[in-house]
View 1 (tube, helix red, strand yellow):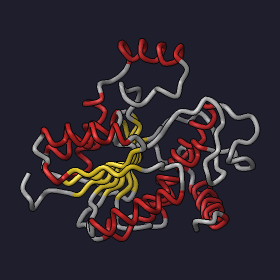
View 2: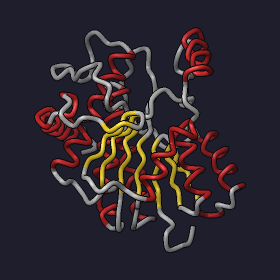
View 3: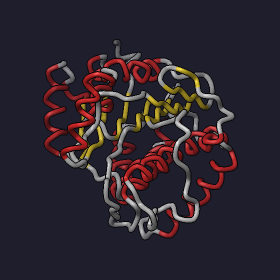
View 4: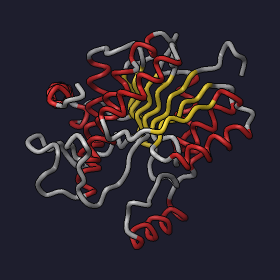
Length: 283
């Protein structure tokens, strides 16, 4: 890839699974890649692997706890200060939490990491993405899956928490985030909601050993290779879709009339999210 076509790509949750594979694929093509992750050790290991591809100074790791609003704001400032143009933002950060945990901001951890970090990164990096000729945001979540719901009266799941319930709600929130971004033309970037399907990817360490073992056994026979799952992401970075919002579930376009992509729900969540952020001391 020539310097004229090389891009600057930011990847949240980029030290494991699909985020990691996307980082290596893009840096090997000549892009500048900034990976945000919580593990310094994984970040160093990824930097060494990127260097073996000849990345030189084109790879950067930023350690941050993306479940903390202050940390999200810090890394967004660091990225914008150093990179006046960002062509692509790939949102992969997520972590299973079998037990309910609260962040330092008092938020349910899955909601904070899986949804709120994606909301804020898309918002805070908007100016540097608007400076790119054809920017794109790829939100890797569960679009097309209609299971789960938004618990409007208890978004922080203080009652009846389960890890699955938290994951499904945050997935629905990400669907609505894409709708809201496109509906309000909240920046120049095209927005892609992407469900890759079951992939040999991700950090299973928070799960108990029996569950980890079962998932790994199932993955041997049923899961897609990570290389196959990231192929559309790599392609969208090169050639963003023309539509303001694209939703793809395992290679198939998602019907935009699905209730999980409703405009009323998107507007309601956007208002509640801004109210929530205003209530935090970091706002």
